[in-house]
Image 1 (cartoon, rainbow, N blue to C red):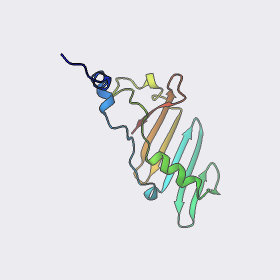
Image 2 (cartoon, rainbow, N blue to C red; image 1 turned 30 degrees about the horizontal axis):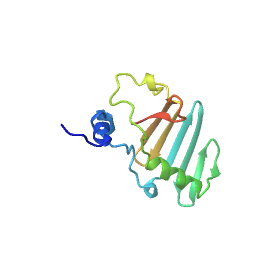
Image 3 (cartoon, rainbow, N blue to C red; image 1 turned 135 degrees about the vertical axis):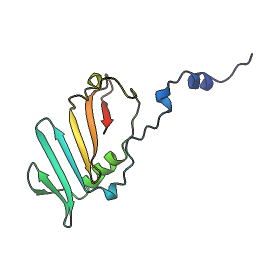
Length: 129
């Protein structure tokens, strides 16, 4: 019988979810050409044109050339702080049956569903489609 550091005991107590890759998206932000965000009935649509970033919805406007790439960089390299469930039987538990918000990235149309808040953390449940 031996005594070992507590790190071995912690590793043995981990679940299968702790060993999954936490990187949800691995997209090169420079290759993204658009973003659509829907929250309730409000839609924001931003696309890259030859003239730069343009907002198409809710109104036609010139989009901020620094803020849009920053947002796409954050979304395109999205990583989970914790994995909550793998292939759950129902996504309703996580507010993903009726998401709070939906983000769709172009050109591949990767979709991020943003569900209910993770209790007491300020974080939200997310699913990639």
